[in-house]
Amino acid sequence: MFIKKAMAILGFLVLTSLLLFIINKYSTQTNASSAEKAAVHTEIYKGNDHLSYPTFSDIKGKDLTLINDAIERHMEASYKEAQSLKKEADQKGEESAYETSYKVKYNDGKKLSFLIYDYQFSGGAHGVYTVTSYNYDLNDHKRVKLLDVLSNQAKIENTKNYIISYINEHPEQFYSDLKKSDIRLNQNTAFYFTNSGISIVFQQYDIAPSAAGNQEIKIPSSYLY
Image 1 (cartoon, rainbow, N blue to C red):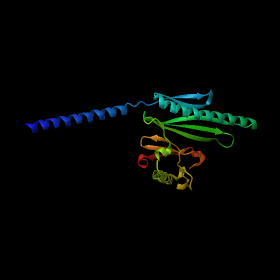
Image 2: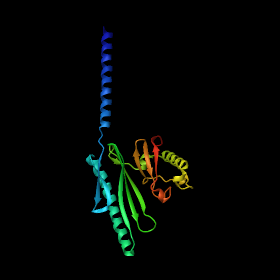
Image 3: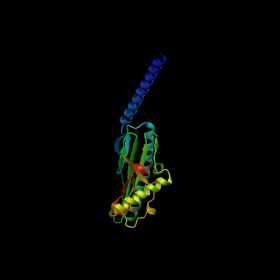
Image 4: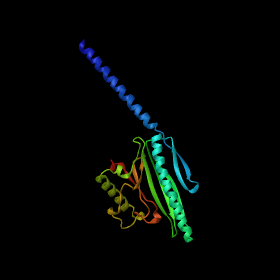
């Protein structure tokens, strides 16, 4: 009799644990799938039609403030640089141009990546693009830089090995004499999140001629974690 009761109690506990596990798993999946993507809008900075930038909604207040403050600092610096460039060019009787644009590269409700491009022309054959990346972990409420992902020297070296291997497999896209030591990965290197890892974005002239633009090389997650 005692054994039957013990078995019944044990069976009840196992069934209860199983049900709780299933409920918790379903709840986790539901929360993950219901993470709402940020809505994206284009704005013009201080009435200058050449200075466009992103604004976001459907993001929690703390994260939204963090993102908006970073964009405001970037655009204020770009605005001042545009004014300075125009003033200098006008004094010399030369043409100049300064523009900003952006691309949202990753937006799944948990992580957000966007790039802001600054283009300036002050004479010569062509202008120059500079790209700045903004990556956010919306669960941890923080901006993520490249060395937060490549968090030790082994990861940095593995990523460099992958990049130089990719370059060697696609030589027509890059400088012919590139070496591993030419690949610089630091806190300010631009990148963005992807579904399978990250994509590193190089500045013009870093690893390829100007005509190639900002080269991007996707790094699989197996090299990162």
